[in-house]
Image (cartoon, rainbow, N blue to C red):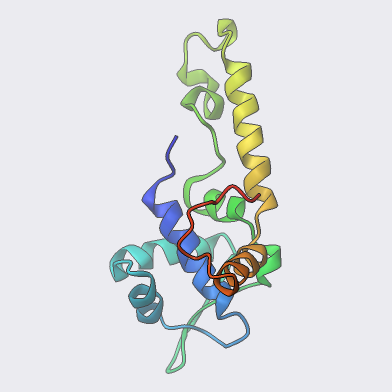
Length: 151
């Protein structure tokens, strides 16, 4: 199972805005440069995040983007839903009519359970927690470690 690059880039952009929370609007090119995301692709992502109410756009000389609420109130699931819709490990869970075997399928309950487990996990991970964990890793000098099994 792999999440799309759009979700991954959106999470990185929201994380960047979470770090900058309270410092005013951040210019799109700054986010693009820092996160190494094409500005054109980032424009589309920011449009989705704005429509979902996760970020706001400010016009003018000091314009840019900012989170609409504190990082502790925004989860990875919020970003996923904003960019891809609700998580479903297989299409028939999202759209039962797309599968002719849906009513007789013995595996659909397992897929549904997996979807719920992943969604519950993503709902439990907020951007404030991610920032605190990253800061702790930096303080401990563990930034190179790849142990992300901490939730």
